[in-house]
Image (cartoon, rainbow, N blue to C red):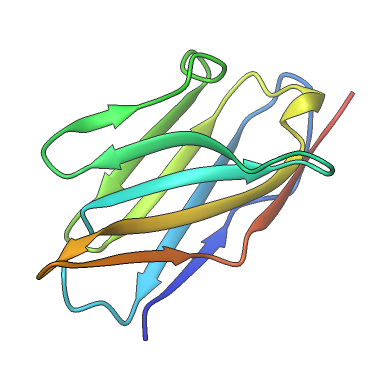
Length: 119
């Protein structure tokens, strides 16, 4: 059974940085895409960054100057470097792995890690 486990969350002051890690286990194949999402209280889950095999990375305009995704495709591990953090970045951050294997889609989620940015 595939599991994704996030780590690296915590409390940081405005302007600080955090580096999140997501380690997977139980997969026998390389994920097509790995991504980071976040969900703040009372808001919808928001896509932050995607790392796709052979297609590089992409970000929404809201974070592209501050967040960087990196990936170890062999280990199915993904990281998110977050700089210049703001109080509005406070949220639960989730790791995701998704794609298609032999005609069947898959979509795995971690349990989330809380990041709090204090003003």
